[in-house]
Image 1 (cartoon, rainbow, N blue to C red):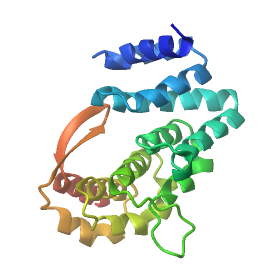
Image 2 (image 1 turned 180 degrees about the horizontal axis):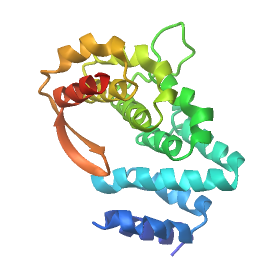
Image 3 (image 1 turned 180 degrees about the vertical axis):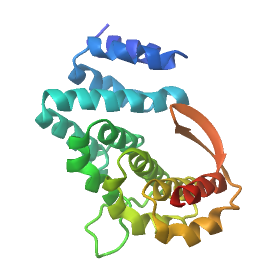
Length: 229
């Protein structure tokens, strides 16, 4: 069995374990660069929980890499950006989750790459953005911005007006995650639109506080409104 397959098998066992959080310390047994390829692969795992938990593991791994060598961390983040590039031939599913979690776990990464993450939702000519036309791929960006806003809101405030625009998106996940992010940055300018979403009973399933949860768009909007107060 190749090293890649062996490490991936071990990682998947850890992430599929109900006690996975207690086992994350086992990642320290591996150099971070060895963990990156199998984690990138696990973002596409057949099990939803494994996919989401791989985000946490990636963030921890990226932070370890940055502590050892910021240049290697930059290379890792640029690799993620390459996955988001249509010309790469790759699908970027889950990559914005990974990018955001790396920024949550390491401030230096956030300082250098938060504008890149936000650029994927920029949707006018005034901004030099990388707007993603695919609404389901934008979901991953909105979740990433919401996750980052909950821990390091100062790196998301620059995306405020685009997040407000996203409250009108047809995709229910995008509306919900935009509301979540706006609550995280305490965007008072979003109050009116968040109030309009308060009664949105559309259900979504997402990952928050290390758990899968079923919530409605309205519940997330209500929580964002409470954050404004």
